[in-house]
Length: 141
Image 1 (cartoon, one colour):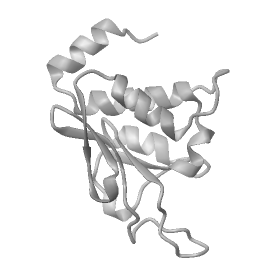
Image 2: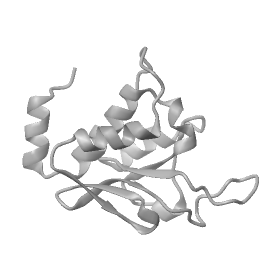
Image 3: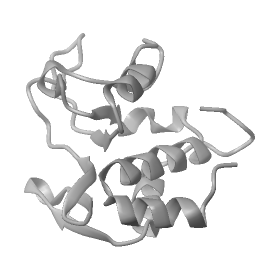
């Protein structure tokens, strides 16, 4: 993802960008955390603190994890392989096509990078017809 001259991303951008994608609905999980869906399939959700995602120094559960679906294991690995990247995964998500991002690190992305991540998450879960229509209307630059 290119850094560009864009401003740092914010959590509010996740909500705005997800809702700009077509056919999106929002459900709410435990703790009233939003779950963004397309065609009844989640593509982004805000996760409750879980024992598998903890601060390595304090052991405290992270309370700000956002889950983004990805297209493939290769896409997942591309995002998490750099240890300085804000993306990570846990054993709980082994074999699951998603990456995790702490809200406290979202500013390490630009808004444009976050927009690409949200769009890719949506595309990975949308029906082939919806994805094709969106890609036709928004050809890659």
